[in-house]
Amino acid sequence: MTKTTVSLNIYYPPRILSLREPVVHLEHCIEFTVRGNPYPILTWYHNNQPLRPVDFIRQEVYKQDTLMEGCLLFNKPTHYYNGNYTLIARNKFGIATQTVYAHFLEQPYPENTDYFVSADLGISPTPPISVTHKPEEDTFGVSIAVGLAAFACVLLVVLFIVINKYGRRSKFGMKGPVAVISGEEDSASPLHHINHGITTPNSLDAGPDTVVIGMTRIPVIENPQYFRQGHNCHKPDTYVQYIKRRDIVLKRELGEGAFGKVFLAECYNLSPTKDKMLVAVKALKDPTLAARKDFQREAELLTNLQHDHIVKFYGVCGDGDPLIMVFEYMKHGDLNKFLRAHGPDAMILVDGQPRQTKGDLGLSQMLHIATQIASGMVYLASQHFVHRDLATRNCLVGANLLVKIGDFGMSRDVYSTDYYRVGGHTMLPIRWMPPESIMYRKFTTESDVWSFGVILWEIFTYGKQPWFQLSNTEVIECITQGRVLERPRVAPKEIYDIMLGCWQREPQLRLNIKEIFKILQALGKASPIYLDILG
Ligand code: AMP
Image (cartoon, rainbow, N blue to C red; front, side, top):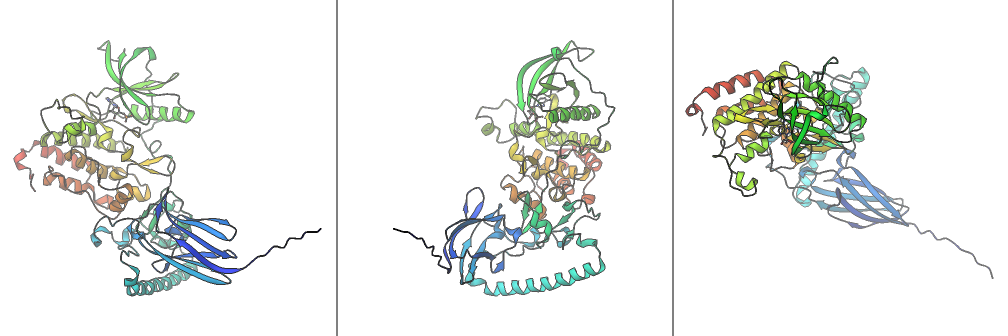
């Protein structure tokens, strides 16, 4: 007996077996199943326009026999991504197409040009494609869009030829047609450029660490210097005071930050006049070498910052484990908690317990709190110190409504929803950040002023989270498109005017922190009847 096997390979044109509306696994995904032999090549169209690589993360395909099962993945798509997605499968025997309508997100606010900043600020004044109606209705719109796109392409080709011919980078950057946002060009940093919704080599490379604004992807690159080395008051000859471990007696836990636990403690031999005093100690357990270095740098930095409205730093216990930093004790804890505990929602927030205080904070107390933070900031600015993370959660409250700026980049965990995680572990306090910090990681004294405006808003809303009604992606869209927070109900017009002065889009047009301090001082002295509470 003999046996022979023959292998039969039947070629046939593609068939799209299924194309489903987006589902959310880890990311949004349009699932599809296609058959064809040989395997067809897949291409995608969004509202009849070819889908650009910047518009989605990737296409995942699993092949088995002649079956292709796959997923078109999107990273946090906004409402601009809503619309018809057409899949075209093609091999040499034929072609198959199928369309599915994808609805990712409700439009967060009515389409209004007020919400989009002008093109010279780097973001297209209207989203390139924004279709939320059914496909049959949009033939006319699509024709216009195709016409415009063709015109844009011709224009780009002409520009490209001109640039190549004259070898100039000028405002088109080095890799492709990208627009420059800031005046100074920094060829080393792609962050000084923004993609105008045009595919560039930069944007094609953009991985998951991108923020999508409209149809524009902005690269968000992890900056290891974000909270540590950027501070420029680090002096190499700083003398950090060392405190003996046996002089510290822990009493109870006060809170927890990303840096470690914070305890109330008694410290002996610290004050020349008192045998012992209450202090707050931050303990870092099992530090890595990098954490030890950060710790040392932080201690040097804090030693150099001394002002009535900056929390007092006494020194460190740097030998052995845990590493300890010793600070003055501020008995009412962080300002955000304090504001919430003294606002109209205090009952809900403190487990329904009747509150011990006499009532909500009044206008003059709010002004007093704001003036003290502004005073601390005037000092930081005089030291050319950019804080980058000013917020009420990073201020502390002591006796007699004494308020100080109390944290320099260590409070990450407890308020983690206030931060937006980009990539691995970089957390950005986007709700407190101006457009230039979100888009280019540009942090300056002026960006601190923007954050101060948000602090004022927090104070006058009794500690609400800015943009609490929006998701992080929506917040990024709002801020970069030029929207600002609304006036808090209890904020007088004069105070909201300061907020608006802090939220000028152009950093140079923002109020200066010294001016703000003076205005607040003057308002604090004015009788409340002069403050226009009702606007
Ligand atoms: P941090 O690691 O600085 O974010 O601190 C975590 C929490 O500990 C804060 O939210 C405060 O409630 C508390 N805390 C930190 N520093 C002090 C201090 N100097 N005095 C009193 N409480 C503090």
